[in-house]
Length: 295
Image (cartoon, rainbow, N blue to C red; front, top):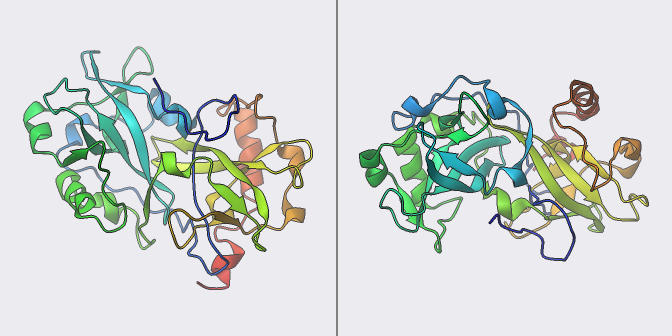
């Protein structure tokens, strides 16, 4: 059963991404880093970059909870969460549970997103895992998640899968966050008033990046209750992980005519929609106004 991230009763598909603070808060998205090569532990599991479901845009909420299979088609485990680097917008890791099938009990393991491929005949996510390697891989108890900024666990993961995992973020600041904790994050305007919340995040696993977030605006911003795609650069992260996001775009710059109803999501991979949303996102600078003013 997939996790339900909603705290208030609303009939929606599972949801996902981000967090904020004040105008001086660090920016959420810097220039997108180059992609590094996977470490030796996952090299054999890496498939061609553009393959099947991985090459298509997808809602992060529909990736969390998805089954993962081994190359023979047998169920291996499932994705419990995604880890995003807020400094670069890069999808850093997928956190997996193996359900005890490999003798690892209730431990969770972080694998680079580029370690996954899809099966030849369908869109199943496939991961090649060697039992001996898994026994040596850094894992953690599912009831005791490691800290995401300073915990030594993530340094162990980097060493195990290859130093390129963090180096791939380039010069951008590294701030890891669980995708499930970003879903439903409140978003405030620059004056601290409510603007809405993050409904979901659209990601591309082949490109290992967040494409855009979908913001569900409050009634005062969108009387018709529309949701709108925005780039990460339109938001600033909070000083503390439990803080709210800050929207760094004036209301008059938001074209609500481009919005859509929560129960009528567009086909994310329709060529016409991709061109339309791509053109809309291009209207935003790669850095937010708060970034331009300095941290």
